[in-house]
Image (tube, rainbow, N blue to C red; front, side):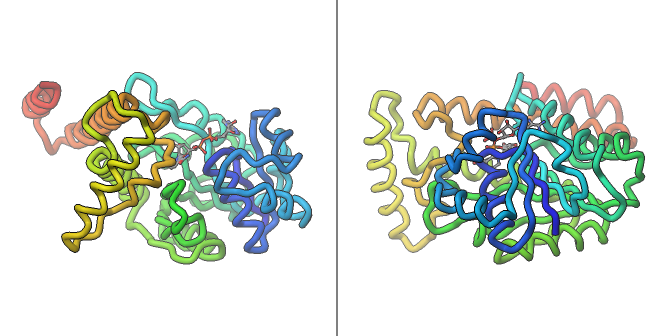
Length: 310
Ligand SMILES: NC(=O)c1ccc[n+]([C@@H]2O[C@H](COP(=O)([O-])OP(=O)(O)OC[C@H]3O[C@@H](n4cnc5c(N)ncnc54)[C@H](O)[C@@H]3O)[C@@H](O)[C@H]2O)c1
């Protein structure tokens, strides 16, 4: 299969390498010329991909990394792994829109496009799909569209891109089959979701668990201790808590997560704020939709919104 991975960062690069290892021909496309230059020199941008693994993928002749969007020509499946940074509490989807437009321009009938970036529910269908249709001049019935969030616990030596169960979803049943079929060729297990929105919500829920989990096991309760101390204390507390027989959801020493940049207690508090705003934005969108289809009266809707704001 000819696989295109748009965005060669923490998420895109490991995926590209895994797809090469699984026998696919892979093109990584990124707008950052400097990053592309480093990658082509075998200098990885993430600990999840060793330089040896990158070198070997490049040497196989089955990995090309480029800034040239024409490299997308003839793809069978395109994975969008571009950033979605929070701005004013909601994800900035400009990179997703640009990437979807670029992919759309090279989209052929029967090909598959999957969004991997994190965003609010509805993004795949209401942000990515219109761009694909506009730039390809195809209709949604001509190609496959899916969502499959990155769920790797970075820094955790046990779970990686291969053995972390991959949540997969499609716009239609045939889309799910196409998306699931591809991911089954590169990862150990897939977990099919009933719809795009279900998978998008599941990703947000998972990240929320992660924040609470990290807050409970890592945050020492004081902003004055050094990060190293926080890790030790958090780890010790985690082990003691787990000795009751209940499995803790994650190893508190492995918090190499983009959710915690930089991983200091104040940043952790920022993380909660971001998550909170994303939660409010998501809740707002869902309530707006319900109100729109007439299941909640306008007055009730207003009252709910103001209750939420308080
Ligand atoms: N890093 C993680 O641990 C992690 C985990 C889960 C989910 N995510 C999500 O995955 C997405 C990607 O995150 P990341 O950490 O890989 O980001 P990143 O910043 O490491 O990499 C993104 C890459 O996309 C490139 N890019 C931006 N716009 C582009 C465009 N229009 N076309 C082509 N390339 C473009 C950037 O130059 C960059 O190299 C985000 O939505 C993030 O929230 C990240």
